[in-house]
Image (cartoon, rainbow, N blue to C red):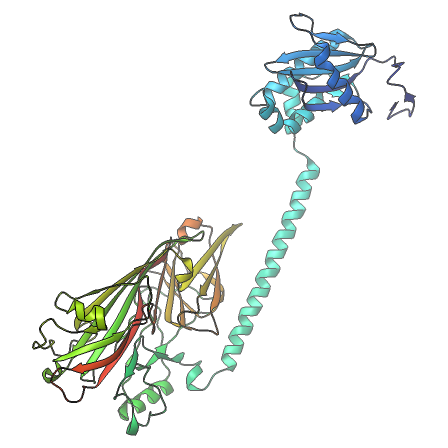
Length: 548
């Protein structure tokens, strides 16, 4: 049954008492009978059109020159297109000449909109073909149009669509403005809160001074701060007491004036306090702002007769999309002896039992003694170790080790960077996640930036930040990462830039524990008598640690 959209009259399709000549459907089917596309121009049920199309392959014979097939009720006007059929289903009262002209026009549109006349090509361009068919046939009758006109009609702009897009864009811009105002209010409230927290040595707002620790961990067997120094309550895990300048720019910071770098000053009260500590005989080491790849600060001078230093250097390459490309740990154990009379000794150590670590002794060491008893001694027991103050980089290398892994859980600090361009700005969100294996100190994450005229607009940061305008690098520093801040983030805005401009990201930090967990258990004198006092320094530093 067909109901006219204009007059409301009802017609019987099966009897085809319709006097008008109409095209019932335009379809594309395969030669096996599979329907790829069909557009109906009169009211028909799905079962009805599927039945008509399913009967068509059975009616088409081989070797016939006709381009139409008639049944009792309908006529099929078709044209082969390689392995497909372009098909018009009409009533028997329709003008076949006009139907053939319509069929030729539709065949031109099929080749125009479909990149290949096969099932895949028709499937990908199905909607475009249906829209084009609608421009050619309206309510079953052919429109007087050409291929160029059909293309023009299908590509014409819509005023309603433009208006909708303008309204949508205005809402987006309004939301961005609200977001910027809220971010500015949050930044202002944080600044006001920091100003209200002035006072106390641990948080001096005026001088921007915080206490810090060096990267070395000293485990002394008989020396250290001890008894009468007045610091007996402190553990000897602290290597040195240092003053840490820590600078922070507000989000509205502008580029520093030419000729002057960024200057971080100390208040007069802080200087007086440090001078009073120096007058009392305390050692004050001025530690500068750490940079990526430079995790070391000045070490305290040697005071114990024997000092053993455990140092591990971490080389890691992380992928920006996740995963790890390289993970390698290189460790050394070095010995420093101040007095020549303490040179005839052996060192007994304890390893953490990590099966992934491969140890290698110095060629002059007794390898059998180390393998059996974990004792480091010279092959010639009558030969003393070299002596003399070697400073932080000096000492005699006793043992080396190396560890490699593809396990991402071994990485102490992972960095995720998410740049996104929105309008004329690039929003960059960076977050770090630290494992519970180590407490990291003097962490610096250096992000390269495109060439900027002024400092980036930092919206939010957990820690402190500094913009190096000479190298166009944004340095994000965290003094200490422990259980209270295993994760953190920073957000900033720069002019539009490609996401690759923010890589590679360099990372620098240090820790007072190592992967090997190597410890010095005892010093064995070879001449007898009491063992000399010794101390152990342990540090984990970064070598080439980056995100690419």
